[in-house]
Length: 171
Image (spheres, rainbow, N blue to C red):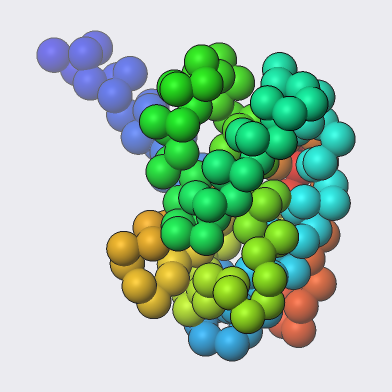
């Protein structure tokens, strides 16, 4: 009986020690919106080349796909909302890159038409490296932008906002 509990207890201790190292910052209102705008524009600059290389569409088919993504961006902040489009283009193998492209394209929406984010929760590890970002719009029908480590691989994003310094990447 005790031998069976030992692996479970060791997993629980690992989970608890991991959670003790993580910190979550929650930002509201105009500060959250400014943080979101800065984050998305930095994300687009940092990831553009790698993401375009990873999507196997070229020329006019890539432009068409990006146009359809742009329409999705105007109606949602949720990268999961493009799953059907990814399937229709047979890009399931490249789904993560397509979702990264979706996030990048949020920065291309004109200022007057942008989604205004009212709440952002950013979880960082003990080194300040971003583990998870969750952005919420006032209108829940637009979804939630939820990004985990897979979105930050191999790129450094340093966000300097009053009271916050957060990094993404360097894994």
